[in-house]
Image (tube, rainbow, N blue to C red; front, side, top):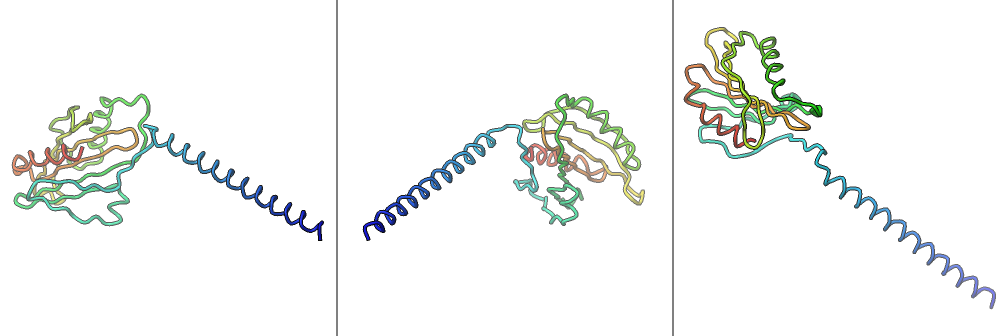
Length: 192
């Protein structure tokens, strides 16, 4: 019986040491993971992806429900205006910009792409400007509607950020543009 007591005591001592070692390993893993996540969270280059937006916009505009196909195409906001009819779309393309990115080169590339892709594209003006706190490319152009009956005037802002580029587009019939231009610019500024 005397031999059995020291064996039980040794087993309890061994179990206590194993539990203490397990606690130390788990605590070290938790601390290491927490430290890694904390350091990684401070990295300014980690992407922050916008998948939807919500902010105030002027009276007369109404938010349209996005379909899954809209979201897959990068659309994150769709607004409609009545009297005069107008639309505002916000779309994002997720892609990292190269280190040597030049917004001036973006102007030429975007105008060339619109000329090739938009039927009846007619450039009115393009410039580099500030929208909110971002440098942006603004392009104003004319485009006939699908039936060729009327002409639309479009103001597009391209806002490149390190990990995604936003495309903000105001579109209305040519004769109604001045009636909604200020509100469209206000929406763009609020967005940015």
